[in-house]
Amino acid sequence: MKYRQAAVAGQFYPAEPGLLTQQLTHYFGQAPSVHIIPKALILPHAGYLFSGEVAAKAVSLLRNRPSGYRRVLLLGPSHYVGLNGCALPRSDRFITPLGEIPIDRIGIEQLLNRRLAIASDMAHQREHALEVELPLLQFCLDDFLLLPVVVGAASPEAVCHLIQAIADSDTLIVVSSDLSHYHPYVDANRIDTDTRSHILALDPHLAPEQACGCDALNGLLAYAKLMQWQIKCVTHTNSGDVMARVQARGPRDDEEVVGYASFALY
Image (cartoon, rainbow, N blue to C red; front, side, top):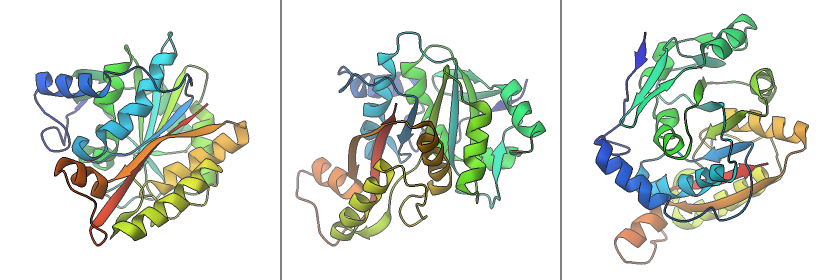
């Protein structure tokens, strides 16, 4: 049995199971905001202080499906390893402070055999974009298989084909992506408003300047358009708004911020 250990527990989210459960209990304390049963989610991946609540509001919609999901196809960007195409782990289980998540080895072999991805533990070893979503999913779902995909430089068509090869009625698709990075607050709001409008239009032509997970996100948007899915922005914010709230002050127009938004596709 080969394990991928948590890489950013204690940095992006609490490493102590009790503290993590307490934080997640707070996030999921309210009933889902709308009665959407998601087929896919788009979630931010910053530290929980900044984007945890934004992600949780979308993840809470999973409770609208009583039968749960057999598998989660989780895609996100490569922050640490130069990568062309998509990378799958060799691990059998991913570990978080909330326990083990079994990897869908059959699904992984299907993708490898069809040459839709490569195997690379290095791409997964330090990657936080996938990891930070896992405790949120564990908290809201019963047992599920995980199929984690780190997406490097890849066309929307390539990612769409990968999703098509795996997607079924019992698979939840999750794409991990933040929005713009380190623009002054006013500029960031303008850029992110425009990006959200493109996402809501299922436009698979986002650039890295708009969303750091644009390659995975474009593939999902292409697939959603093909399937004629609907989409809703659940909520959004940015790091400037978060810090203003934490420090009980107004946002600073010249503060460089990162944008976060969550979406449900159905």
